[in-house]
Figure 1 (tube, rainbow over the protein chains, first blue to last red):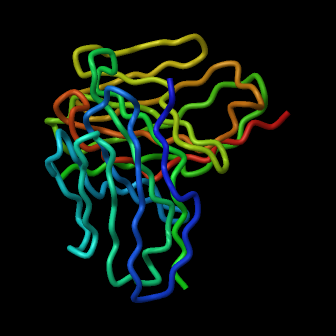
Figure 2: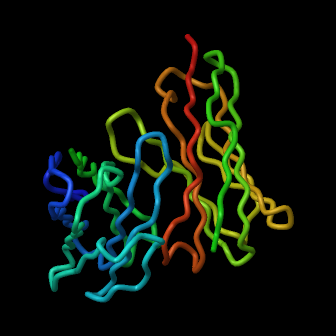
Figure 3: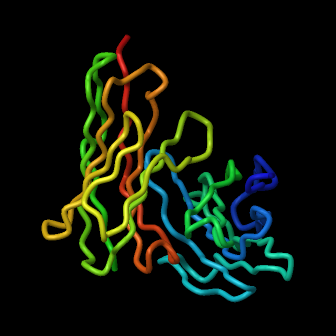
Length: 114
Length: 113
Protein backbone atom coordinates (compact mmCIF):
# COMPACT_ATOMS: atom_id res chain seq x y z
CA UNK A 1 0.00 0.00 0.00
CA UNK A 2 1.41 3.39 -0.98
CA UNK A 3 1.89 5.96 1.74
CA UNK A 4 1.10 9.66 1.64
CA UNK A 5 2.83 11.25 -1.32
CA UNK A 6 3.66 14.91 -1.77
CA UNK A 7 4.92 16.89 -4.72
CA UNK A 8 7.12 18.59 -5.51
CA UNK A 9 9.89 17.60 -3.11
CA UNK A 10 11.48 21.00 -3.33
CA UNK A 11 10.11 24.32 -4.53
CA UNK A 12 11.99 27.56 -4.94
CA UNK A 13 10.06 30.79 -5.35
CA UNK A 14 10.70 34.48 -5.01
CA UNK A 15 8.90 36.86 -2.71
CA UNK A 16 5.46 37.80 -3.97
CA UNK A 17 4.99 34.70 -6.12
CA UNK A 18 2.46 31.94 -5.55
CA UNK A 19 3.22 28.35 -4.60
CA UNK A 20 1.10 25.25 -5.09
CA UNK A 21 1.83 22.09 -3.14
CA UNK A 22 0.11 18.76 -3.72
CA UNK A 23 -0.74 15.78 -1.54
CA UNK A 24 -2.16 12.34 -2.27
CA UNK A 25 -3.49 10.53 0.79
CA UNK A 26 -3.29 6.86 1.56
CA UNK A 27 -5.93 4.96 -0.39
CA UNK A 28 -9.16 4.89 1.59
CA UNK A 29 -8.32 7.91 3.72
CA UNK A 30 -10.73 10.83 3.48
CA UNK A 31 -9.04 13.40 5.70
CA UNK A 32 -6.02 15.47 4.74
CA UNK A 33 -4.15 17.74 7.14
CA UNK A 34 -1.51 20.32 6.28
CA UNK A 35 1.23 21.37 8.71
CA UNK A 36 4.09 23.85 8.46
CA UNK A 37 7.44 22.91 9.98
CA UNK A 38 9.71 25.92 10.08
CA UNK A 39 13.39 25.36 10.86
CA UNK A 40 13.91 24.56 14.51
CA UNK A 41 10.22 24.70 15.30
CA UNK A 42 7.54 22.12 15.79
CA UNK A 43 4.73 21.38 13.42
CA UNK A 44 2.10 24.08 13.15
CA UNK A 45 -1.39 23.12 11.98
CA UNK A 46 -2.51 24.87 8.80
CA UNK A 47 -5.64 23.25 7.37
CA UNK A 48 -7.83 20.16 7.63
CA UNK A 49 -9.98 18.84 4.80
CA UNK A 50 -12.41 15.97 5.03
CA UNK A 51 -14.82 14.75 2.37
CA UNK A 52 -14.04 17.78 0.24
CA UNK A 53 -14.81 20.34 2.94
CA UNK A 54 -12.52 22.57 5.01
CA UNK A 55 -13.09 21.42 8.61
CA UNK A 56 -10.62 23.52 10.54
CA UNK A 57 -8.02 26.17 9.97
CA UNK A 58 -4.96 27.13 11.96
CA UNK A 59 -3.75 30.58 12.87
CA UNK A 60 -2.38 31.51 9.45
CA UNK A 61 -3.28 34.44 7.16
CA UNK A 62 -5.86 34.01 4.37
CA UNK A 63 -3.13 33.84 1.72
CA UNK A 64 -2.74 30.24 2.85
CA UNK A 65 -5.59 28.30 1.26
CA UNK A 66 -6.31 24.94 -0.21
CA UNK A 67 -8.83 22.48 -1.41
CA UNK A 68 -9.61 18.80 -1.53
CA UNK A 69 -10.60 17.07 -4.72
CA UNK A 70 -13.21 14.31 -5.19
CA UNK A 71 -10.43 11.70 -5.14
CA UNK A 72 -9.41 13.09 -1.69
CA UNK A 73 -6.10 14.47 -2.92
CA UNK A 74 -5.40 17.99 -1.77
CA UNK A 75 -3.66 21.15 -2.81
CA UNK A 76 -2.16 23.87 -0.62
CA UNK A 77 -1.79 27.31 -2.16
CA UNK A 78 0.29 30.08 -0.70
CA UNK A 79 -0.18 33.48 -2.30
CA UNK A 80 2.02 36.57 -2.06
CA UNK A 81 4.93 34.56 -0.69
CA UNK A 82 7.00 36.07 2.10
CA UNK A 83 10.50 35.10 3.21
CA UNK A 84 9.16 33.63 6.45
CA UNK A 85 7.03 31.17 4.47
CA UNK A 86 10.20 29.18 3.87
CA UNK A 87 9.58 25.88 5.62
CA UNK A 88 8.86 22.19 5.21
CA UNK A 89 5.17 21.67 4.46
CA UNK A 90 3.89 18.32 5.61
CA UNK A 91 0.68 16.64 4.61
CA UNK A 92 -0.95 13.90 6.66
CA UNK A 93 -3.93 11.69 5.97
CA UNK A 94 -6.25 9.71 8.18
CA UNK A 95 -9.60 7.97 8.01
CA UNK A 96 -10.75 4.61 6.84
CA UNK A 97 -11.93 1.74 8.95
CA UNK A 98 -8.58 0.57 10.27
CA UNK A 99 -6.70 3.84 10.74
CA UNK A 100 -8.26 4.74 14.12
CA UNK A 101 -7.74 8.42 13.26
CA UNK A 102 -3.95 8.00 13.18
CA UNK A 103 -2.35 10.67 11.01
CA UNK A 104 0.22 9.34 8.56
CA UNK A 105 2.64 11.87 7.18
CA UNK A 106 4.13 12.42 3.78
CA UNK A 107 7.78 13.30 3.25
CA UNK A 108 6.96 16.96 2.76
CA UNK A 109 7.62 19.75 0.31
CA UNK A 110 10.47 22.06 1.20
CA UNK A 111 9.54 25.57 0.10
CA UNK A 112 12.29 28.14 -0.16
CA UNK A 113 11.33 31.76 -0.70
CA UNK A 114 14.14 33.98 -1.96
CA UNK B 1 -6.78 26.89 21.98
CA UNK B 2 -4.61 23.96 22.95
CA UNK B 3 -0.98 24.56 23.91
CA UNK B 4 1.55 21.74 24.28
CA UNK B 5 4.87 22.24 26.01
CA UNK B 6 7.67 19.70 25.64
CA UNK B 7 10.86 19.21 27.66
CA UNK B 8 13.75 18.87 27.33
CA UNK B 9 14.57 20.33 23.94
CA UNK B 10 17.73 18.23 23.74
CA UNK B 11 18.65 15.02 25.51
CA UNK B 12 21.79 12.91 25.37
CA UNK B 13 21.94 9.48 26.97
CA UNK B 14 24.41 6.62 26.97
CA UNK B 15 23.47 3.63 24.88
CA UNK B 16 21.55 1.19 27.03
CA UNK B 17 20.26 3.83 29.42
CA UNK B 18 16.67 5.11 29.55
CA UNK B 19 15.33 8.35 28.11
CA UNK B 20 12.28 10.26 29.32
CA UNK B 21 10.55 13.12 27.47
CA UNK B 22 7.74 15.06 29.11
CA UNK B 23 4.84 17.07 27.72
CA UNK B 24 2.10 19.14 29.27
CA UNK B 25 -1.13 20.25 27.62
CA UNK B 26 -3.59 22.98 28.45
CA UNK B 27 -6.97 21.87 27.06
CA UNK B 28 -8.75 19.43 29.34
CA UNK B 29 -10.85 18.34 26.33
CA UNK B 30 -7.81 16.73 24.71
CA UNK B 31 -8.15 12.96 24.75
CA UNK B 32 -5.64 11.63 22.23
CA UNK B 33 -1.87 11.88 22.62
CA UNK B 34 0.45 10.52 19.92
CA UNK B 35 4.23 10.55 19.82
CA UNK B 36 6.08 10.92 16.52
CA UNK B 37 9.71 10.20 15.70
CA UNK B 38 11.38 12.21 12.95
CA UNK B 39 14.78 11.13 11.73
CA UNK B 40 16.89 13.65 9.86
CA UNK B 41 15.39 14.43 6.47
CA UNK B 42 12.53 11.98 6.91
CA UNK B 43 8.82 12.16 7.60
CA UNK B 44 7.41 12.05 11.15
CA UNK B 45 6.37 8.51 12.05
CA UNK B 46 3.98 7.50 14.79
CA UNK B 47 5.73 5.38 17.41
CA UNK B 48 3.06 5.13 20.08
CA UNK B 49 -0.18 6.82 21.09
CA UNK B 50 -2.49 6.84 24.08
CA UNK B 51 -6.12 7.73 24.59
CA UNK B 52 -7.46 9.34 27.72
CA UNK B 53 -9.26 6.24 28.91
CA UNK B 54 -5.95 4.55 29.81
CA UNK B 55 -3.06 5.65 31.99
CA UNK B 56 -0.20 3.73 30.42
CA UNK B 57 0.64 1.92 27.22
CA UNK B 58 3.73 -0.11 26.31
CA UNK B 59 5.17 -1.37 23.08
CA UNK B 60 8.44 -3.25 23.56
CA UNK B 61 11.05 -0.67 24.68
CA UNK B 62 8.66 2.28 24.42
CA UNK B 63 6.01 3.32 26.91
CA UNK B 64 3.77 6.34 27.35
CA UNK B 65 2.13 7.44 30.58
CA UNK B 66 -0.74 9.91 30.94
CA UNK B 67 -1.84 11.89 33.98
CA UNK B 68 -5.14 13.56 33.08
CA UNK B 69 -5.42 15.39 36.39
CA UNK B 70 -2.06 17.07 35.98
CA UNK B 71 -2.46 17.29 32.20
CA UNK B 72 0.87 15.79 31.37
CA UNK B 73 2.14 12.76 29.50
CA UNK B 74 5.57 11.25 29.07
CA UNK B 75 7.49 9.04 26.66
CA UNK B 76 9.84 6.45 28.13
CA UNK B 77 12.43 4.65 26.03
CA UNK B 78 14.36 1.87 27.76
CA UNK B 79 17.57 0.14 26.67
CA UNK B 80 18.29 2.91 24.18
CA UNK B 81 20.03 2.08 20.92
CA UNK B 82 21.85 4.29 18.39
CA UNK B 83 18.86 4.05 16.01
CA UNK B 84 16.74 5.79 18.64
CA UNK B 85 18.59 9.03 17.84
CA UNK B 86 16.03 11.37 16.28
CA UNK B 87 13.70 14.27 17.08
CA UNK B 88 10.63 13.22 19.03
CA UNK B 89 7.39 15.22 18.99
CA UNK B 90 4.47 14.88 21.35
CA UNK B 91 1.02 16.03 20.28
CA UNK B 92 -2.50 16.39 21.60
CA UNK B 93 -5.89 16.30 19.96
CA UNK B 94 -9.57 16.24 20.84
CA UNK B 95 -12.16 13.83 19.50
CA UNK B 96 -9.74 10.92 19.83
CA UNK B 97 -7.58 12.21 17.00
CA UNK B 98 -10.33 13.06 14.53
CA UNK B 99 -9.10 16.63 14.55
CA UNK B 100 -5.94 18.65 14.18
CA UNK B 101 -2.87 17.74 16.19
CA UNK B 102 -1.22 20.37 18.36
CA UNK B 103 2.47 19.54 18.58
CA UNK B 104 5.16 20.22 21.12
CA UNK B 105 8.37 21.84 19.90
CA UNK B 106 10.30 18.58 19.81
CA UNK B 107 13.15 16.87 21.66
CA UNK B 108 16.38 16.04 19.90
CA UNK B 109 17.51 12.73 21.40
CA UNK B 110 21.11 11.65 20.90
CA UNK B 111 22.25 8.19 21.93
CA UNK B 112 25.94 8.09 22.78
CA UNK B 113 27.55 4.75 21.81
